[in-house]
Each structure stands twice: as structure tokens, then as C-alpha cells.
Amino acid sequence: MTFADDLSGFPAGTVLQSCSIQQYGVPDNTVACQQLEAGANISVSLPITGRQTPSTYIDHGMITLFVPWSLLPASGGAYTNSLTDFVPMSLRSVALTVPDSTYWCTCAE
Image 1 (cartoon, helix red, strand yellow):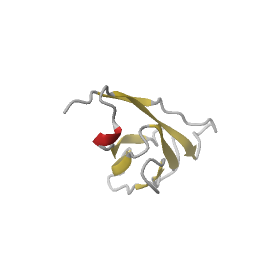
Image 2 (tube, one colour):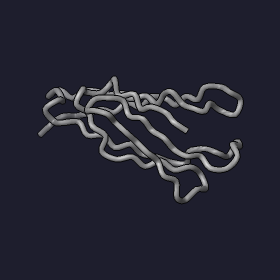
Image 3 (cartoon, helix red, strand yellow):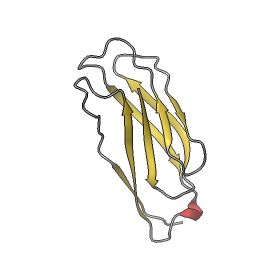
Image 4 (tube, helix red, strand yellow):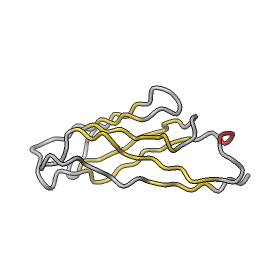
């Protein structure tokens, strides 16, 4: 399965730090996350093992981002990312969607 983490709602210098995503019931999944340059979207690839069934799903995951302090306004702000471009689609060929995630930064030294 592949998808993108759309970072267009984050400051331009946002950098991928780490990535960990797990398929339900598969202890040793290897996920590959790649960001070609700071601020670019993140490409995620996760091998899904076994036949696709209603119980074939992502159990948990985390993508850790770093935003340089110098890019954050003193007033803070809300930053939104979206998981998009899922391949393959769901069992019924309906595009997979995940709610956007919004993060609030209170920027104080």
C-alpha cells in the first residue's frame, strides 16, 4: 500500500524525522517513508501481507515531523496535514480517506 502525507499546511522547512506504521496482526512490517527535500510531501510505502479482507488494516502508526523554530511565528498557529493518494483503494474500490490532522503550536521560548 502506498500513500502520501501532504504537508502543504505546514511551514516550508518541515522535515521528516521518523516513520512507524503497522499492519494489524503482522509483527515485522517494514514501512518505507521518503521525503525528497524539506517541506515536500512524504511518500509512504507499506507492504500489506496476506489476502485483503475486512480485517486487513493499519493498526497504528506515527510520522514524526520537525519544524525549525525559526519558521514558526511567535503567535503560534495551526498546521494541518492530509493523508492522500492511497493505492490500492478499499475492498469495494472506494477511495480510502483519512480525516485531516491539525496540530496547534503555542510558540513560547
